[in-house]
Amino acid sequence: MDIDAAILDLDGTLIDTLGDFVAALNLMLTDLAAPGMARARVDRAMVGRWVGKGSEHLIHCVLNHVLAIGSSGQAAIDSEATLARAWDSYQGHYGVINGQYAMVFPGAEGGLRALRRRGLPLACLTNKPTAHARALLQAKGLDGFFGHVFGGDAFERKKPDPLPLRKTCEALGTAPARTLMIGDSSNDAQAARAAGCPVVLVTYGYNHDEPVHAVDADGFVDSLAELERVVGA
Image (cartoon, rainbow, N blue to C red; front, side):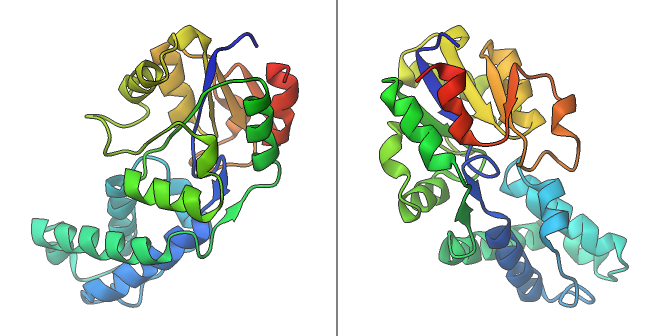
């Protein structure tokens, strides 16, 4: 690909963060302590289906799951007060846990080095809060690769809306058509297509429990180490 810059997703693309999500969400459920809720738990398979569209979406999915398995606390869960408590609890626990149960995917650092050898400016664009994204990248030693890090709270809308990609291209000073989006899901691909960016997806990420090869993308890689071939670094 003839590109001038690259934008990379974080969760499911660079770092396997499902363990962090599971731990924080289960602590949140215990904190809420609505009837039946404290006994409910989520696991990696569930969270892998729900993650990728921001913390609000993730929390709503978890609470809906609790209702689906028979919680008698529906009135409390549906209240704004409970949603606010859930948000505060989850963000608090995640801030402490962030990175403890996460692992950099094999090949991720090699792929970043390949992009840097090509001289490409890099940005990380994720739907998780910016503060959590920055802290996680720093904890895993990847922060030095990125000139910009934007989270789901950085712009008015989140992926799959194209606005975050367009704004990130502006920050990079590159045209969308020459800025490669690298992600793991239909969220990333839809945003890239709408923004006019080429897009490559990894095959090992969290694509909402759907086959990633069915997503409209320009290519797929089994490891970010393959980016050396994609960009000719």
